[in-house]
Image (tube, rainbow, N blue to C red):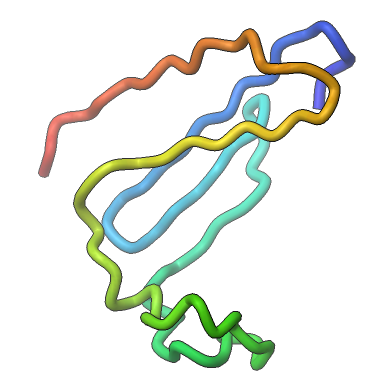
Length: 88
């Protein structure tokens, strides 16, 4: 994370069932949706909340992407830049 007042950059890579996120050029998370085959337990054995009633492996991999920013101090003044890549 950058200092207050400086802009952070998030990059998302979503090829098929893999999702990766970079923060300021460094990987911060990666997920393979194909590993989530149960609606009750995560791949590590921990429980999935009951309201998530469909395994991630069965969720559509095409559609809209939702972005959420959470700040308690003040509303965001950032403007996300979305770059669309051609479909394979």
